[in-house]
Figure: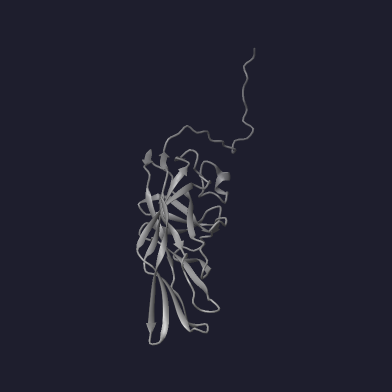
Amino acid sequence: EATIKRAKFTNGFSGINRIITYTFEGSSTMIASATTPEQILFSKARDNTVIDPSYSNNVQQWSVFNNWIDTTVSGDTGYSFAGFSCVSNPCAQMQLPLRFYLDSAILEATSMRSADNQVIFKIRQHPELGVSFQLGMKKGIEEVKWLSNLQQEDFLLTTLQIYFGDAADISFKVRAKLHLLKLPTENTELPTMKLNLGQIKLQSWGINNWGRTKVSYRVQDVGSLTVQLKTPKIYFIQQQRQCILNSTYKKIPVTLKSV
């Protein structure tokens, strides 16, 4: 079940100056479970750039399975700004940087890019396999906006522009692709994996002595939101019947038997 993180309100003072603080607490996990396809097959015969010279010139050479893996999300999937009130006139607009922190213990950035120009990360526990992914952001009833991942490490996803009194929730989605980085040497089956891709975290924002009432506002995230991908089953096939076209032979004489 998908839920939304909600902030805790505190009302304090520094001398005679009022400080209103909204704090997102606790660390939680957003699980993106693959729905289609249910399984992915990589084979030495099909996914071999040596066998198929034209394939090695293809920009998608690391994207043998080149369709997005559809997912459904559960757990905490975003942030709610419902109930954020302003006592100043005019009210300030919140500028909230949203960053993604890669789980480098699980994933290792490579110099390769997918057909969508997303970074391909090697899965450390299974170095023959890579993953690329995009995070999607949805505000209220708006369409999902897919955020490009062009950096190899931590990066800014976007800056949320939120007004006080804006009740729209910000929620996230995940889509991913798997990539064969090394040809299989044996038949192997990988059961469903739970890959921690990284963490989403709001950066602190604040403004001092705003408006005629001179109220200060703070928004902070003292927890984090871990993004986890639950993959389909993966099969590596080492041997498979294959046909190789050799174009180096020309004008080979063939003797026909007389009838």
